[in-house]
Every structure is written in structure tokens, then in C-alpha cells.
Amino acid sequence: ASGREELVYQQDGSNSPVAWSFDGRYLIVSRNNEQLSLDNDLYLIDLSTKQITHLTPHTGPALFGDVHFTRDGRAIIFAHNDGREWYQLARMDLRSRRIETLDDAPWDVDATALSYDGRLFAYTLNREGYSELYIREVTDDGRLGPKGAPVQLPGRGVISGLEFSKDGSKLAFVFNGARFNPDIWLYDLRARELTQLTHSARAGLSQSSFVEPELIRYKTFDGREIPAWYYRPQNAQGKLPVIVSVHGGPEGQERPTFNAIYQYFLARGYAILAPNVRGSTGYGKSYTHLDDVRNREDSVKDLAYAVEWLKRQGGADPKRIAVMGGSYGGYMTLAAITLYPDLWAAAVEIVGIANFETFLRNTSGYRRKLREVEYGSLERDLDFLRSISPISRVDRIRAPLMVIHGRNDPRVPYTEAEQIVKALRARNHPVEYMLFEDEGHGIAKLSNRLLAYPKVADFLDRYMK
Image 1 (spheres, one colour):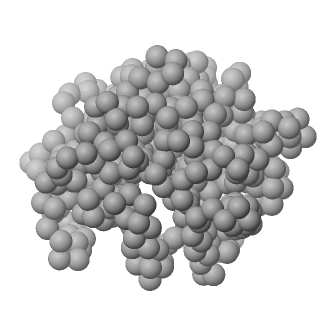
Image 2 (cartoon, one colour):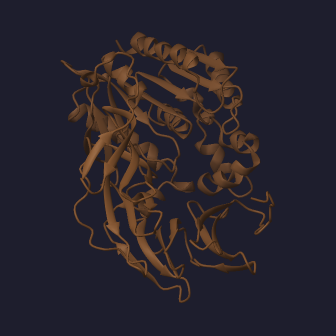
Image 3 (tube, one colour):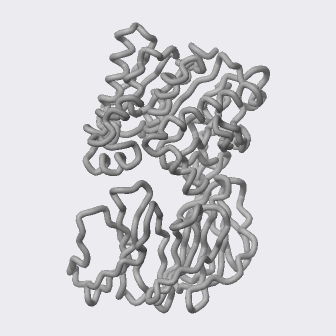
């Protein structure tokens, strides 16, 4: 009303406001820890006194988030994985700091929402990559009523953007599945009916032409089972050409959402295996940290064992298996073709890391701090970083390689692509290079996507078919 601004909190770090009490007196801020990977803390700010209270002192990496005040302001509902494998719902009494678990399901909480009157709570669980949606009543003291069965969804997929209507009678969300490009759906809590509100264009393609993946698991070098999504082209016959697609992050998870690029390659006859190698999120805290620093190349071994599964059980042609990935997945692609050069018929690397030393020196300053926690620091681990950089083993590459980058990439500078391309051209090794002058970290513009991906498919056809 007045336009007046007031500084209520200042600290030289990465801070985000995450919850506001119903009476407007309290604010909760999340602060990232720059010394640990996937670690943060919550702070309570009394806006009338400017007093700051540290709510979540802990040791070791832990995440705290999805914070909501109760109606009386005496407690918060939030999610955390402090001292546990899973990111689970809990309640904290703000006076005693006592924490009690509200849902102990062995899966991560994903999306959350509290109704405007604080009487209903909606959340999703990430069960094996698929979303399960629950809606529960909230008691006056901030505890949750019976869990009940999950809401019946239009198919198997992933939910995001939960939002209650003002009167709490409806819940809107985005549903996104392998056969469902993202749309907004509305759930009527009284009628228990689901209605699709938006209808995203499919460019004239039939929904029945889209392929849904099979969730498989394969054993890797240490006996651990690696989850992966296997897409087979419709009407496929004989031994299949396969693309092993590696997600970025590395703190990320391949989930069965709509992927136009996958559907394009499937329509051109390629099967796709998208693994969640060690280091991925969604499978417990220990699994996420299995690739930290000195264990970096264990995740690349997981890719090699994915090829073994494809040959034994996936119906793949052993001579027609490619690897492709972007960002950290681009590093994994280069690492795969240098560590296991005989496995791959071709490779496609997009905005990836070729040299950890130059990447860390040239990436944006804030990014270096965050990434050194995961990869190793230039001060302490330089020799190790050099040893695991694909550029140091470029002479081992046998697979034809396609490299794509954006000149304006602030995360992984395009000079990473220039290094690997220059080294391969010096050896007269088959390498194709596309540098987009108007792109950053990825290929975002439709005109560029329409240029890049047909060229990728043509490149794969040349060496795989």
C-alpha cells in the first residue's frame, strides 16, 4: 500500500524466503551451505524484533524445505532428510524445536501445498520416479489427518505446481507423463473428479504414437541395482539400435515425463535407455552421494554395465549402441567413450564438461563454489580433476562424436567444446561441431532445436544404420 521497502535480513550467502506466517510476523529463510553438497539450513526471522533463530542445526549433508506455517504460527510442516535416507514430511514445534514425522513412506516428498485457510495439505511422493498425490486434513496444532488412498491420476507421470483454490474446494496442478505433454488439471475435492483444463498442442501427432517406458533395473559392478527407463520404438523388429541417454545434474533424476526429443528418436527407430546411475536423486541420500569427488568414475562404470544389460536382455544390437547427454550428462558421455571406448558406435555431447580444471576456472563464480563441493576443488584436488577429465584421455576415443554448445553458456563455457573438438580434429577423428551464437546452457530456441536434433539423428543414422 505504501510502497515502503524494509531490509529484514542480510547475510553473504545464498538465501531464499520460503514461508510466511499467517499473521505476517514471522518469515523463514533457507540458506545453502557452500561447504557441502545438497545441504541447507532454515532460519526463523521475527520481523518485529529482527531476531533470528537457527531452526535446523545438524551435522553432515541434509536438506530442509517445503516449509509451511500452521494456522496458529506455533509450528511448521516441512520436509527433510536429516539423519535419514528419505526427504520426508515432518512437523516442528517452533518453541521446543521437537520434530515428529508425518509420513514415513520410503520415498522423497516432491511437491507440497497448504490451503489458504491452513486446513488442507496436499503433497506428492516420488515413488520410483512416478508421482503419487495425497490430500490430508490439517489439525489445529499442525498434524495431519489419515493418509488415505492417493488421488487417481490420468496416467503415470509427474505432478508439479500444486495450488489450492481460495475456498479450498479444488486443487490445480501440472501433470506431465511420457505420453502426456504438460497440461494443467483440476481436482474437485468434493466430487473427487479430475478435469483437464489446458490442451497443449501436439503438432498434429496422435497421442497413441508416443511411447511409454518400462522401468527396469540392472546389476552393476558392485552388485548394486541401477534403475533405468527403457523406451522401445513401436513395431520394432530384430536387434535394436539404442541410445543410452544420461541426465544432467549430477544431482538430478531421469523421470518418465514428456520428452519430445526422445519421441522423435523413437519415431526414427531408436530405442532409448535412460539410467539413473549412482549420484542420482530420488533413491535415498546415500545413493545420491555415491559419486562424490573421488568416486566420480564409479557412475561411468554404471553406464558400461547398462550396455551389458542391453546386450543380454534389452534386445540391442551390440554394434549399434550410442551414448548421449547434456551438461553433466555431456561429461558422462565423454567419460564413457574415453574409459570404455569399445562399447560405443557413436556419441553426442551437448554443453558438457571436457576439462574439470578449465571448467571450474571459467564457470560463473557462484557456480564454482557449488560445483567444487561435488567434483573436488582446484586447490586440493587438482591432480585428481586432471586425471578424470576426458580431455586427458582423448587419444582413447574411437566412437564418432557430435558436439553441440551455446556460445553464451554461463555454466559450462563453450571453450569446453572447443578443446575436445580441436583435439579430435588434430587426430583426424570424425567429429561434428555445432556452436550456436544465440544459445546458453542448452538448446532452447525452437528454430535451433529444429536444426540441431534432425542433424543429430542424421549423424546417428550415418554411424548406427
